[in-house]
Image 1 (cartoon, rainbow, N blue to C red):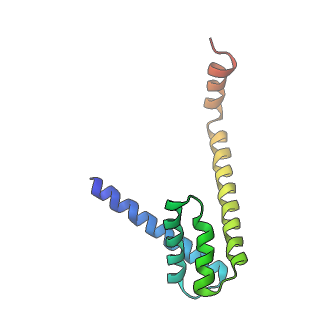
Image 2 (cartoon, rainbow, N blue to C red; image 1 turned 45 degrees about the vertical axis):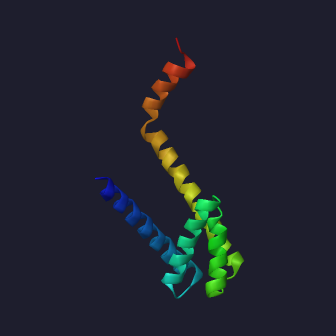
Image 3 (spheres, one colour; image 1 turned 90 degrees about the horizontal axis):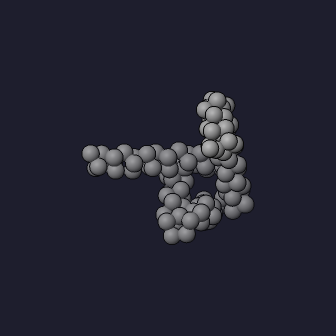
Length: 115
């Protein structure tokens, strides 16, 4: 059972990296999804050493392998982070909307009038 979960986790990481790599091909008008995929994978590897350094290293790899301007690649990273933040905010607001009555009762019971 643990082996199946491990295999599923690896498959989901690889499919996510392929998605991000193909996304870079689309945004940066590259021809090779393979180079973008390996740039994403090198960025993931760099994140193990220094957290959040993978995005910058990914931009450097794309610069050296495909002559993509660093500022253009880094711009896609900034846009990607902004979209992630907006999606997180949207999910947070959706949860607040759906669970408002439950959250209100918890607020009143444990924070506003604890006894």
